Image (cartoon, rainbow, N blue to C red; front, side, top):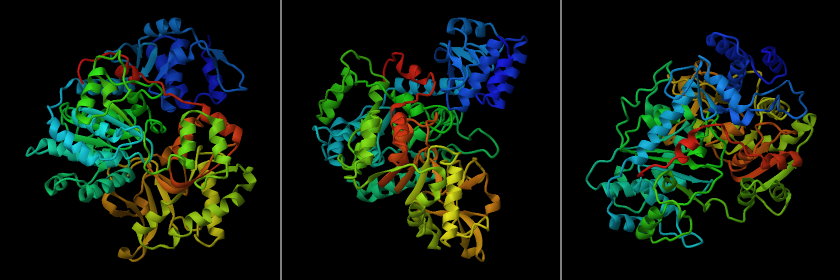
Length: 619
């Protein structure tokens, strides 16, 4: 084999410069020229860029590269066993426990730091599963469950009640559910139950989310619970008053990837709740879980069917073992029946041991969408991978909340967008109050699958500005025109601004009408910064579906590309559709839409096997 083939793959667009340079570096460090090592290094670099935690040699061995349809093959990857043996002989490749740039384990090749993040997270979760929770007062818990979760769902079971029972009796719990299934409302009542169980003992609770917007929404829900939950005033007063971002909870250190709280300096908490957990990447989740004492409870809330995090990993999906159905252990089902009175068939009679299977609960009833609504039915069809059903529902004009528009050619996109843009954005542009302007701006959003190209975020944002200028709603000849929406694209820990945070540029009466950029925070608070202080950012009338995770809008227009792309998958379509509270319009090519719904992507990782592939004692 010839290393020039890596250069050929670079010239074909398969590798980026960073992949080629990393391959060259590994080859030099190895001390001898090795195409197998160089190719593996380039591929693991590429895999990491695409959000994978590792390179699965089993998935690429024997394949021709590039893999794209219509591409001319440049080379064929080596046999898995032969390739693995060759890598094991290299000085830059180690096995678990060794300190090498690359780690090979079970035919999975990792960058060292991703291997460590995965191992640390898996170990922390397993340790938590092995710690016996404090005994609960079952009579008090039974009464609390019936009082706080009085409604029974169709089928005679309350999955919210089962989720609450699980969270109270486990050190680790995942509550998954689609939009409107009441995840955050359920956790407010879970905290109430935990406080009732604690009695006079003080219980320290922390609420966190990956973005400021998600933290603000969690704060809002908990705030309502403090006035509406069915418990005494003493318990209400003990409920947490707000949520923060995960970064803020851990304590950011300016210009450093590390946090003030870690395994050696753990958080002073008894319970940690993390909302929108599907958005949390592997490195951040590993750092968070390591900073939580093993005897403390960790409750993760999220939607396992959403897109994985923007950065590496699919932690929630791996921890839920998405795509496979597991039943509860015999003992846990017996415990549930005894305390809740609910008997059900979600069991595995071969599973006697208690483990992570008993720590995952899926909420199944949506309180936001009627089961027969268009959004509910089309999102279910997408999740089932039924592209024909999903496209048929969108095209069916009998639904008021979902619409389909055949994608216009690029030159007609501006004319297509005019009605949506003017209706969706004109109101907020007339509002001077920052908090109200932000609220109104967040009622409508254009979501795109891609960043570049005629149907990508960059072009759509440019078209939107042109339309609004034509309607005399903005003056884009001034960079920081009133109402310009911007999204932060790089974390700035010192300013507490993080990738995905959205703000509006508006005149500030308190500074003589000078333009400031306003951001909403938890508790309905807005804070302002001068535009020159902002880290990297971009205009955001349109955003990628990835960036929309954790957000909700009354109305969504989702623009899909005119041909298949690696990012166009079932999870992306589902996430985009379910960002809408009231109405969603999908603009695309029907054949492309159907194909995308059939495609399910799983990021390469060993976390799923580390949590589900072994048997653990205790929970």
